[in-house]
Image (cartoon, rainbow, N blue to C red; front, side, top):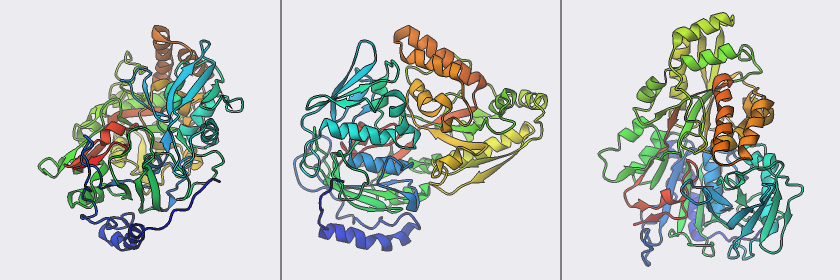
Length: 530
């Protein structure tokens, strides 16, 4: 593995020393809150970049996974694992519906697609350097894509489901050629989702000494507590305004809010609607919620390998039972959007023409009776992976009881719901959330081919419709993709009642975070303090 030595600076040693003591301030998972004093966080002197005064260390708090947090982002399932990785590693690109190709490129200059939709050519920027001084090469990009393809996480498997990585090759000094497994027109949206990051060729295991080409250098990582970074001065393009970045792992959203309002952090990710409402009169902080299409879909998944969810009448009953308007009103205090049992609201390929499914507990009960499932007993497994997830599950269970289901909730600790994904995919009834990705790539990622994350849905006919839509453009793609989504809407095993923004909040002097948005997760390459 390629690596380099990073000496422990006095600041780094202080960071390590203060972490354990600060854990007492907010309980487990808050161990780094005292690592940077308010004096340390003040912006350093320097020219104004236009984004804010240059310098300073920004401190941000996220839900983490406790001791299971990892630097290996190919197997780290939490939001903090990916945010940490994106601060550290360069990305191929990010989704941006406003951009010409629907993406903003990172370490790539662009992606060319052959006329037959069978080959993608990734053209690399020539000014990308790793923190050990070496230049990015096509071999690095190809190695990184193959590592992603070998991951067990659905978001990374997507590249192997669409591109023939065995036949992929470097092309000259600045390009990679990726043959597709079948013709696709939307491959840019797959490669530039923001989760395909670049490591050096030969890297197998990530440590604090692993060279990287992202906006920041990693200087410290403590699972369950946080990570510290300093600016990567040779970062390609416009470098960060910040001198440093600290990412804190704080599972409880009230603790994240307290850390923000007390000045211990400058940014708090994913607050609950109740907590966010308390910020309205505080001039020191402001809400910065994500906007459509970057909304998070909260859903409940029925495992079709478990009876009685193999019966379409039962699945329809569970969809009719949920009171979507009440979820928006009660759990999210109106700061959410009603869902229609399909992901990807706001993206161009979302099926807008389907009727909104109603709340009809009487019909739900009749369908359950017809299926011989009236009075069935079921337990819904959930966890506080994002605020509102447990509360929504609790309210949904009440709706199911009103339809004649003897339902209950099983709540796991934060960070544990998806920690063992194989075990998760065997549960009969589970809560989930979907990150904002276009509809057809989402189907390919989570559902096609009887994927484990499909929880028993295995429909080659729908897979074929999606494949035809993705090999088309314009009206034909919209029409064919709509047919596939209608099948999912009618017969699928997902109850998706609500889309919610991530209710982030930040100190009044923070700017630029929204300029580096990754799905619902913020980035910090453009952030500034003033």
